[in-house]
Amino acid sequence: MATPRPQFSFSAGALSSDSSSPVAGPLRFVVERSVDVPIDGLRVTLAASGGVAPGDPVELALGDEDGVERVFTGSVAEIRPRLGGCAIFCVGTMLALVDLRVSSSYRDTSAGDVVRDLVGQAALSAGEIDDGITLARFAVERRLGAHAQLRRLAERLGYSLFADRLGKVHFRALGAAAGLAGAAAAASTALGTNASGAFAYGRHLLAAAGRQRPALGRRLLVGGESPMSGQGEDKSFWLTAIDSDFQDAAGDGPEMLITDPTARTKDMAGRFAAGYAASLANRNSELRLRVLGMPGLELGDPASAADAPESGLNGGGHVRSLRHCFSAREGFVSEIGVARGAGE
Image 1 (tube, rainbow, N blue to C red):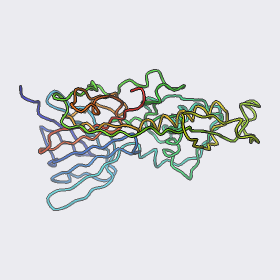
Image 2: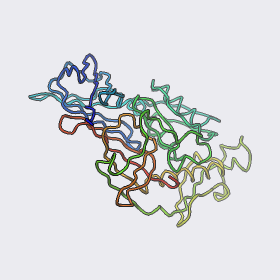
Image 3: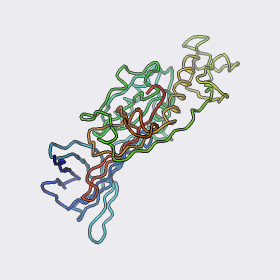
Image 4: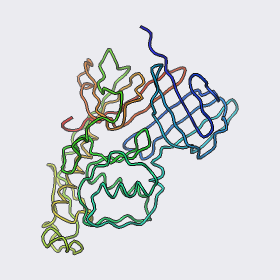
């Protein structure tokens, strides 16, 4: 049985090119996306520039003769012309949130509503946004980009902040954080449309490698600066004289103190401690899988490897990174980084 031939569809500004009409002679596409990297990237090698200009909107879809699916949405960041063609470097939509610098103050607002507000101010579309917890007070300052401040908020909850292949922003509980209080019930559902998430040795895997590290083994102690939980909600601006009364912890082992002024109650300190612990747990073990092109796979989707002769390569988790390569020499292959957190 013949393998379906890889197909592409690429647009950048006025340039429109696909497998049936390869205008400008596309030679290679490389898409790189990761939950741990703020901005998605796309590198395109063309035989001619095709009139593409910096700032042009970009879309890339990959697949086979049965159809193609979007794998990247963004804009042109840089063009490098040279003899015999040019290279185009594109960035994902999250750049707008990275560049956004505003001053905003929130009171009795959920973490999800803070994210939705800033995503809207960046003129981006919201994807799946978990509400998380209610923040008594939260401020965003202009000295730092909005993305960096939301990324810190995500780490407190054990959440992940990323853009999907359509350019929508997600604020989700993945892996070890999915069972924490405030996580959406559907946090572990797949976003991809054609990905089963199961890759078997001898059937799907072209290559596989793993990495395992010991768990952190720390007791994460979080404390803020307010006796709000002891004196009432209207005292959230007070400072505490006895820090230990309003601290809480998660995990076991040698103590690691994290001072977080946003943790204005003992309950909130406990939730942040669990969130920090979950964020660290998502980095303990990882699989790197190389498979035939999977355009429908999305960051956060469940994924697993099975039947490998080395037992350390078998197991599952959630997709932490994606790399799609498309060229005449390589065909269409996808490299998948799978985080294997506790309970996955």
